[in-house]
Length: 220
Image (cartoon, rainbow, N blue to C red; front, side):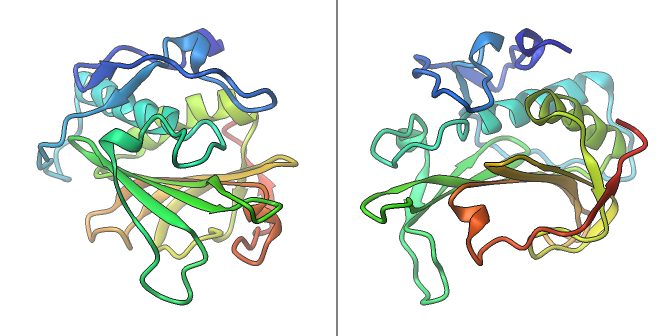
């Protein structure tokens, strides 16, 4: 799939003015990516009922919108999601981030963490934690494809780099600047949620991220 196919239109997405693409970062800009999720009404999905193709496409649209809002390693002041997110500062000494922001969609949540940059003179967006409230394996595979377009072929790891209760395959990507994982997490809610975590330098070079040993993914 080409980058131009990454982001499809969704009824849960509204147009925004696209920002400038930063070099050396994965991009959705050529895919019609100036969109962001704004629907906040939660819809309950029976986990025992298979999702229809239409439902899966809607979830994929939400997922892509949430990923788009975290594409650039920018400051909170310049972040295009600032006006649609609820942001707070750390409440505990163990919290190493400077700001945490949340964007809510119909079936998911996106958490965006801003950490001190290399010079520690400012904080930039270095971690995304996206959770979509379904546990359908087909949705997991739907989400894998666009992430693979950004980072290339995935590996399978035995455990995640974050606190979670995963089931099934844990797909893992690493580059010189990024670490990303996609899996179903039953620690988010008992029924399970599809979870995508993306950490970026300098965060992944610090003690905040412990990268697990990877094995090859036969599906990619």
